[in-house]
Amino acid sequence: MTVVNDGLWTVREVAAYLRVPQETLYRWRKVKYGPPAARVGRHLRYEPETVRAWVRAQAVA
Image 1: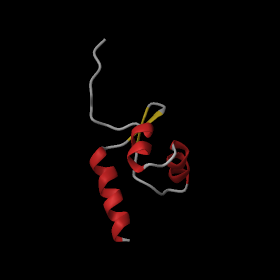
Image 2 (image 1 turned 30 degrees about the vertical axis):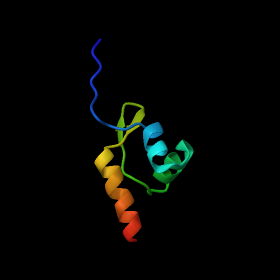
Image 3 (image 1 turned 180 degrees about the horizontal axis):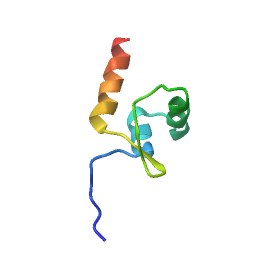
Image 4 (image 1 turned 90 degrees about the vertical axis):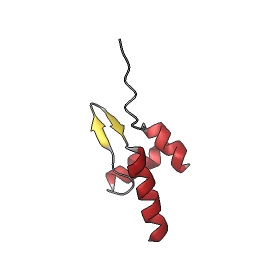
């Protein structure tokens, strides 16, 4: 089996980057807050640049 590194971040990786608990990301998603994520099967995946752009936008607000 070949594993492709598509460059997408998992919930764990985004939580580590933002230094928040993983549960916070799930809560934010329920209230339509936080960086946008794509659902891949049962899993959430984040584009790293989108997460970084979201952080920059929060700094401006």
